[in-house]
Amino acid sequence: MTGRIGPGLVGEVMIAIRGGSEAFYAHPVDPREEIAVGSIVVVVEYHPPRTVYVAHALAS
Image (tube, rainbow, N blue to C red):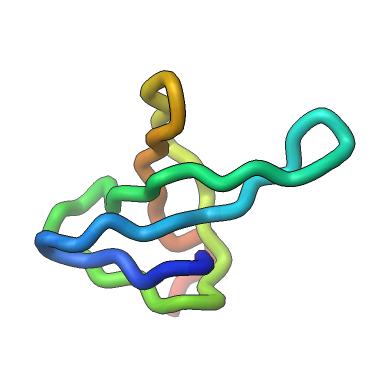
């Protein structure tokens, strides 16, 4: 996570693609969840062209 996400906030994630990395807008899968900058996340859904829905990859 390079930008915090939470209720009413759109964050940003950097994803390794095609030998580089690209930025995507990130929304939490659970709209009540907050995810801090630097958290490790997993992409659950992708919506073209640049939006992903993410969840924590590791349990807190």
